[in-house]
Length: 480
Ligand SMILES: *Cc1c(COP(=O)(O)O)cnc(C)c1O
Image (cartoon, rainbow, N blue to C red; front, side, top):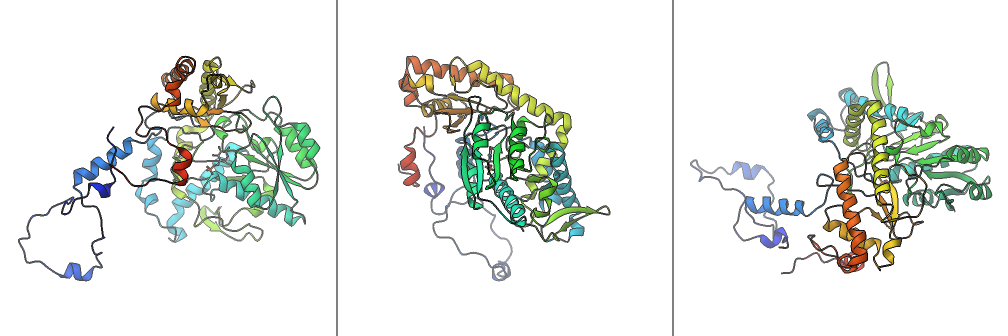
């Protein structure tokens, strides 16, 4: 395969992307004199239009993306993002509105924000939402700050936050950044929170429990009501990581399970693109006891009029410039409105069905550490393949050859050699079958020809990398 060179390396003195006919009028200096045009940038690539087009087209084709095929990256919910959302976000009045515009000029935008916050409250059973946080992890931090502010107002912020060992990795960081000590709570045989372990540890130093539901094993925390009753009985609060709400929408509501505060990921459940560090949104929902502490400004409706309101003396303050990533909210609202309530429920049902189809189809070939029925994702391990010295890394790399993005690897930590697989609802049965076939082929190769796995990928643009060296000592120059 030909390696794509850097655009600097295809540059040649004098090549241009355009050419104008010779002037048939006298040259005027006024334009160049009156505009601060930049001098030539040293070593700026000089290339033709065709070279630019081919260079970037080829680069774009070396990337795997959801528009190319299945992307079953567990916990990340890489579902297809309908192009309609993009079209709506590109409506000129959204696209070109300026955050410093007068509120009178932004009534439509404010209505979008308020409508979305109200709809999210309805879906989750919470009382109020803010869509300021830019990501799930920032939502968690905001949630922890709200809990701290609430407990501080009562005179004691407390010391500990409990986090089950099946929680998402961002949870402990968020609690820690907010000044809490993290205590890990064990999972039981079913892969859910061990109530006995929680009860043993619970006391009046406990500020909160952060519980991911469904958890990263894809298992629904069916004792969440008991968990929240127990935590509440000692004055603690319940944070739910709702990034996986795509398994619950229209079926059950965290607000009915004793959850006090939660976040959602618009860039997962609500089909706005993510990855590559692009903008996301991690709206935070609260029960009314925490509402006075929400970040300012808040969007409110008064006499049929929308406005930013900042007069909340107990608020934790502003946590993002302006009001978060506005266009992400526009895309997510387009998604919610185009699905409607029944559509959202069907999304969750299909996500769960698809995941269980994969789980059932591969349960002979790949080990399942937990036998509990799962929702939107299932976690296989490499235990059976380890007998042939094949690891989850080898399986993941071979999947690249076979046309699929690998599942999330080596997470959650409680499953050794994990392959956490989340197909999402947007895959057809035919595409699920292609993935299942590829996985079955890999299981067979592990027995018959493990070498082909250990040296995979064979057909990708880049072969297997020495990942430690690549991270520590990246080679950024092309060498012929
Ligand atoms: C993705 C995810 C997060 C973090 O969300 P970011 O937007 O990546 O910060 C938190 N919890 C769970 C369960 C997740 O899947």
